[in-house]
Length: 488
Image 1 (cartoon, helix red, strand yellow):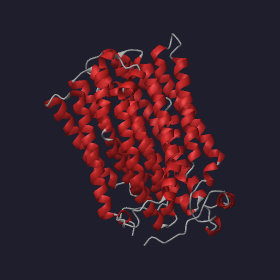
Image 2 (cartoon, helix red, strand yellow; image 1 turned 180 degrees about the horizontal axis):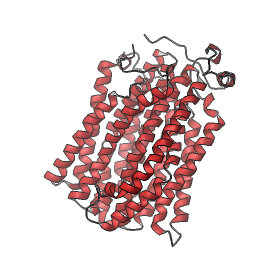
Image 3 (tube, rainbow, N blue to C red; image 1 turned 45 degrees about the horizontal axis):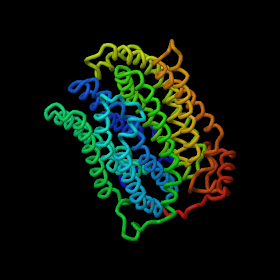
């Protein structure tokens, strides 16, 4: 028995499943962003703009470190969702067991590297000497929380692969509230400054990780593993890395390109750095509906490709794209009419910072649909196991961000505004690349397991062409079809 919160997405309305799954993810992602928002608000209000810049300049680097482990977690979740869709309980349990070794090894290695390399990385990013020591302190402290992040992401990825997007939300809300309280205590009451903000985040991350792990063990039978099941299995570990590493590298490449862009921003001084930090925080919130939609599509497509239903994957994709378009259009007037109010939540002591940030939000809001078209196709292709796409997507985004930054910021009449023009143009071009990859259809042949096309009944959702695609996929070298056992 998989657990009362799990959802089988291989039957029923695709839109209903996607929305039902995405809503808890959205709430959870918004609470997760509360970590960063509260950090910035507390630092900006009680410490000052210099400290805000110190925290902000670590954002891309921290994203890089977290991406290396979160990518592996996503890959593990994809494997679980496909096995779950194929009713293969044995391999669901084997994947969960071996994820322990994959995520623990990766997170501890990244933590050590990040701690040691922090000052060298920040110097490469042209962080001003006036805030370098604060930035190093913040980065090193947050690196201590990578194991907690990896544990939470790993358990959450498995629960979501099984169709349960609600449970991780509850523990994320708890840790977010804990983060808010600790921020105020450490910074406002104890005067710990940047270190207090980082420490509050780390403690909150471990709280969410431990609580989510305990729940999964108690309530989800798949997590109650025997000694025999806990023995390392090379094939499962290999599959986890085969899917997870390209996703991690994709995120890492994007993070590196963001770090390079941060270095460009740093060259324009503390005011532009602070404005860029504020716009990043706000846009991180804007990205959450897209991210939640993508995660829902990942699980939805993983279960359905595992069950062998390509047409149903396509139908869900079309409906998800429509959802992204509606949200994108709605956000444009929000940024034009309410952008200043949002910016003033972060900045109290610099009108110039406010002016720059407000205009920057108006620039990037026009390209939000491009951002959505990065997330939704990425979610589908990750769910279907198209690891090659992860690299294509990462390379295209890196190339755009690096080239556009060099072009736009070097034009005298544009100057530092080129930073935000780079962001918008990168979203637009990369989104187009993602749509092209979807239309090419390579994702149809990437499932690691699933029912053969001959097992599918002829329905309105299963076309002859999709049956042929699946039949060909079964003959692709290196693919295998796991023996199915019914989940009871």
